[in-house]
Image (tube, rainbow over all chains, first blue to last red; front, side, top):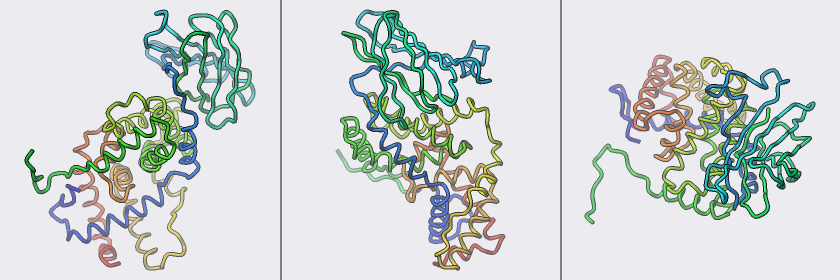
Length: 174
Length: 209
């Protein structure tokens, strides 16, 4: 590296190498990522969805967004409201979005969703630690309910007839 | 094109490493699980260190770490310039860590790092020869006497056996600092550690093997 001889008291280079090597070993032993976390990161490759558009999280009532005075969900009783929006060009020019209300249901969470523009769709729920992909249907008004979702990371994908599938960014349900 | 010599003392470019990462990124984007695994192996120690750097608990660090990788999957097709990957990963990881901290309202005072380290226990293995174990224990103790900022920076910069430009870019982005400032800080912190070791009369133990 270019900075090894940074101070006037710097001893012989060999001593520096030795210090770096020993300290590096100790730090690596102390700070190594847990094997299970690394394994999960590798497995997450299977969660990749090609041919879907990404809808970004544009509003989160729990995140103290600018201009939002309420801290919904903080006490655990007020539902959290998430809005995801796909900003790219759409076939019809209308914005594609989903609003999701997250409420507590014992140790699980319940999702109440509204697609924009309204209309029927198939909804998929994915969780990295969950097993299979779950599916629900949105009604003609674009409303849907997912009764049981585990806490942790989650994403939704919606498919409408004749349109590109849209998937939300990953979000953490607390 | 004429061959040019890099001036002595200036940073050496590491095209091989950069190309390697770029190659793996392209392969992963085209659906290659093995290339993805390589990327995860390559960057996991640094990303995990960053999560710990921000004082996240083990559970929260796992979340921020996992989210960073999921975000990369979300955007893997849109990172057109693979040289940006280290910076992108560092920035994303920082954002996820800060977001968890805000959400949990559990910001640890930075000094708590030492406490965390105490509780996480020393992992020096018992089957090491006693001399080395003793030397390492003393080195670790002096390291713990450095100011917290130095400890944190050195943990990030020394987590890899041969930290290269790619790692430095990632760390700089993760800390929101200019990449050029890391080398001098590292040098100063190491000099301070050496001072502590000298004062403790134990610098000699690091010169023999």
